[in-house]
Length: 322
Image (cartoon, rainbow, N blue to C red; front, top):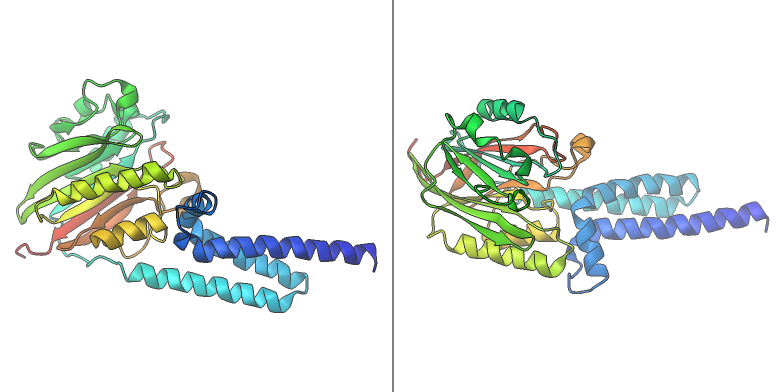
């Protein structure tokens, strides 16, 4: 056997091993149990990227075909394609009803604490957004914002009289925030909010959260429990969950939270992070709707220097009068 042949077989072996690992993570990482200290952590680090991993598997299959391992290449490509189809089917099974009017428009944005934010330009962007309620996370760069928008958002909660390092959620509203509160999550204070908004069609709760990364497993599960308790306190009022949930809709965390609370998402995923990847980014910032809430409009919103895009969503209370 020639040296060239030996090196080719070694390359094929390494390529096959890498392809198998990428394909397995793309197909199954969302079902790997978190309790396993190695596989669980790896799975939670990768399951939001399942679509990307399956796409990469197809590219790796093309490499195998060039190496003349064509039957295996065809099998990998077929398995990856089937995985992508199953993700699409699962996503479509959890789509929210589409509304016809905007009873409430909410804007969520992770400002990013190291953002050199142009505050006046950001204020102009908020004015043009049409949002009734603005929820900002990692809002330290926006601490000078409220006076600039006080005429349109006279009501504020969060980041008031706190150390800038503790400024996480800042809520700006056109309507009074008399029935609203902030609570801590694993990574610090003021990372969870519950806001009751009275609309002409009835009340709706907005639960906002900035969750820890899902692969920090014990703290991640505590965050989920805190959000679950906030949802239980809503007195059967319809609600939306908005926030940087640090997970895509096909991840274990989002699938578990949506199944537990019967939450629905927009009809297509909107990538929000990292901004530099554009349409190839991950949809980890969300507005999710409970039973009784339809989503009328949903779009990404300029990052203004953040590594996250914002999200604007208009929702309709399905029980309200037309």
